[in-house]
Length: 190
Image (cartoon, rainbow, N blue to C red):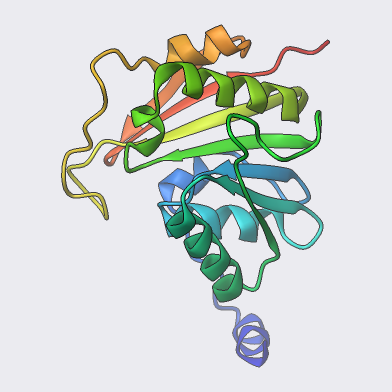
């Protein structure tokens, strides 16, 4: 804290640029976000820091290693992250609660889920995000950054189709850059 204060007095910059995967989400201070899965620590730590103490950070995962990673990220960045296990094909949070849901598919594990189960998780995401809220899927493509190897996804996998089938409209590809693909879906205002 003292170091931060001294840098402010000296006029130096105190904040480094956010990693691409954090910037692309557009998450803002005070928002409530849920991340499904935790493979990219930079993604979760950046999102938790962005929403700050006035927001809510949560992670749902069916993988004990991801749960442990998420808890460690919270400890490291000093953020309270509510980590909960997925229950069968349901997500353990209230309806219409989150401003944004981020799916961390940087390692291809969400794409590897059986397609009917994946669609159930997306429908649960639609249930939990507020009207006018959004979902963003961050896919690792490999070939650069921390994800050097190619990420293999099933041939029948089509996240835009799945987002639309779950009720997110419109759904679109935002960008492919630096070894990541970013897809977004909006929950219609009702």
